[in-house]
Picture 1 (cartoon, rainbow, N blue to C red):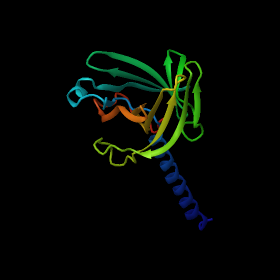
Picture 2 (picture 1 turned 90 degrees about the horizontal axis):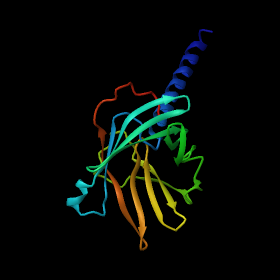
Picture 3 (picture 1 turned 120 degrees about the vertical axis):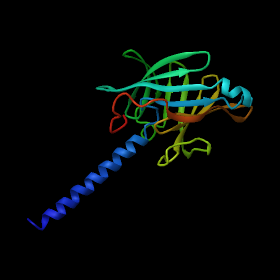
Picture 4 (picture 1 turned 90 degrees about the vertical axis):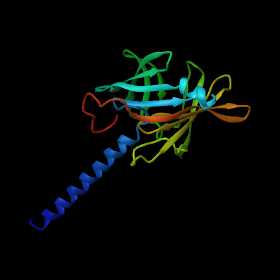
Length: 209
């Protein structure tokens, strides 16, 4: 038995390391913002440089709470002219827009992106498909040193044939959005800043939803 003890100890240590890696990976692969205090700032690349700052959009996670049905996240969208808050449910890789306890729209379906690569919003006549993973092509965006900058491109097409592509990053969500105009993809929304406007008021959970 004494000879088995070191082996058992080594096995337990390996399991512990594997669990830590799994938890770390889980934190990185939620394609939506969820950390309380996280603030994301976007610019419309089609505007002249002088106007981009004035028209900036800020998304801030103003509240984040784990519930039995998934993580509930409140995001405040702000510009110089408006300020609105929306609530989302994050569950099993999915992100849904909520109104109280009523689910309005799955922004990303449960199982995204590995178990679900196509879905449809029948109410709005919009279809979605995963194009694949890619590296972030924005060297000016400052991210944590251990961030791998690998995200997922999703293409959406309306019933009228309008096409849009969105690049989703782990823990951030939308990082870039393009629309198809005269056969050319034009960037209409781009993440230019990621940070925290204040420290989280509650302890950050060990894992993302």
